[in-house]
Length: 190
Ligand code: GLN
Image 1 (cartoon, rainbow, N blue to C red):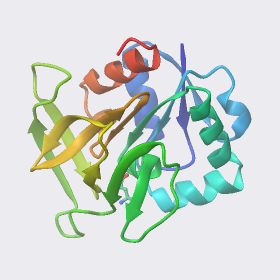
Image 2 (cartoon, helix red, strand yellow; image 1 turned 90 degrees about the horizontal axis):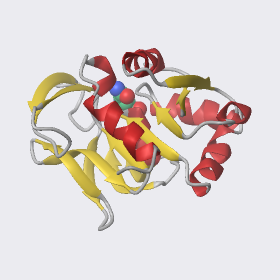
Image 3 (cartoon, rainbow, N blue to C red; image 1 turned 90 degrees about the vertical axis):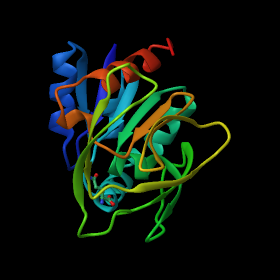
């Protein structure tokens, strides 16, 4: 199995390292052709507006929608979750709309921008280390969305079918639980 990592901007290198730790083949995705032979795509953290601009210019925005229509799996972290959402606020912006959530950008404000929490999830008995960096807040989830972890009363890890998203950054910790879950999902095993 090969995983594509969208490598326009942001912390895509950290996702590559996380996949290296579990021994999974990966390729950087910058253009539609880079999706060839890929089972799942990671949309990393960074600046969602920049991602959106470059993805649109390169034809990747439409290519990712086609990839989803062909049953491709997705994992978005932070800015990646914003790109996957059905609805984006503050400000409203375009998105792939592959995940039935509404999301508020920079939801914790500028002062309380970054924080590390520890929280339980449905993925493992051990708590997850949750690194939040200018994170969005998931305001609401549709009926088809499974909330896998919450923090301070908000969903922070959600799944709908073959789409997984976190508002925190598992790729910035040594714990590979969330990436392993994504691989199982991409493989059709969860
Ligand atoms: N604040 C960024 C955005 O709105 C996301 C931050 C992140 O990915 N760490 O796109």
